[in-house]
Structures are given as structure tokens and as C-alpha cells.
Amino acid sequence: MKIGERIYEQRTAKGLSQEQLAELLEVSRQSVSKWETDGAVPELDKLLRMCDIFEITLDQLTGREGRSPVPAPDTPQKAASITALTPVKVLGIVLIGVALLGGVLAPPLLVMYPGNRYVLRPLLLAILACGVICLCLKQHVGYWCTWSALFPLCFLTPHIAALPVLSVIGGLQLLCFAAVVLWAAKRFPPLPVRVTGKWVALLISLCLLCLSGWAAALFLVPYFVLYYLLLNGLLYAALVVLLTYVARCIKTLRTGADA
Image (tube, rainbow, N blue to C red):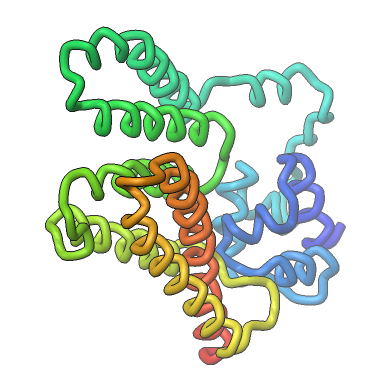
């Protein structure tokens, strides 16, 4: 059996797609496809990382030593591994429990402290979102939890300062945005498609458009609070996706230039 067949066998046994394995190895999906069809041979560091992912030795992956049989998908051993509670899932359950408990205690607290309604509700929503992310996602959990934790600032800032972009809160939020984008550029793999400078410029323009819409929405606060919340949430979600793809596009261009 060739090494490409072994990679394919181990990947399918772990229930990973080519895209998922590519993200874990920080390569493109086409690279994984070439490895599995023996069109290319993985580098040593990629082989070692695959051994960690597949939980086998290098000799087993390269065929220099007999490996233990892969359990069938419907065996109790695999079912137990799927249902096992990982630390991230336990954290997700705890966060959801905290959010639900806070939701139960929120009404009496808001009666006693009505001025904190702008702080408590967004905070509980952020905790709930982080808990759901921990339960549902297997990759980049911290990345998406960070964006969710920053989300309440989009709603808190207008109530804290008249000029959020120039305030300390707004400045800290922009610094956090930049830090998360830099993290994405370092951690996320390149895109498995051809990227041009025009495509990156278009994405950056859309990011600036979202930021402009976010600033314009601040003027809706005194008059149309519901519209402001809806528009702000949509613009924030769009900005997160766009910034993620901008980081990956830039990394794709740099990878192509280095090659």
C-alpha cells in the first residue's frame, strides 16, 4: 500500500475531510489531494503532524511497520470517542449554563440596577455564543469565541461614549480587531483558490464600507434602536467574515510569492 492510500485511509477513519485536514496542516486542499493520489510526497514536518492527528507512528504511516487495524465507523470504540466530553465541550456546557442562569437572575437584577441593562444582556449573549461555539466547532474555537466576546462592544460603545472611535473603548476594540486579524493571518491556512490583488482590494473596500455603515448607524440610536441593533449585528458579522478572508487572501498571495 502506497503512502497516499495510507493517508486517505487514516483521514477517512478519523472522519476528516480533505479541507479539514488541510486546515490542520496549514496547507491547501489541493496539496492533500495530491498526497492521496501520490502526485506529491508530503514534507517530513507534515508527516509528523499527520502522525499526531492520526495518532499513529511515522513507521505506520509510511508502511515500514505493521499498524493496528482501523476500527470500523460503527464500532463501540469509535462511538465512545465521538460522545466523549472533551475539555472544550465541558467549557461550552459551563458557559451555556452560566448564560442561562444569568438570564434567570437578570430580571430582578435589572429592577435593582436598571442602568446595567446595556451591559448585562450583551454580556450574557456573548457567553451563550461562546458556549455554543465550544460545543459545535472542532477547529479555531478560540478565534470565533474571541469575535463573539468582542461583539457586545458594538452595542455598548454608543452608550458609553459619544465618539466611540476616538474613545478608549473604541480604541481598545480596534486594537483587538487588529490582533485577531493578525492571528488569523498566522494560524489559518491559505485559500485553495487563485487570489489576485484586485480581489484583496475589493474585500478591503467592503470592510471599509462595513465600518462606514457601522459609524453611520450610531446616528440611528436615539431614533431607531431596533434598526440600529439589527444593522449593527449584520455589519459586524459581515466584517468578521471579510476580515478573515482578507487575512487568508494575503497569506495566499505571500505563499504564492515565496513559491
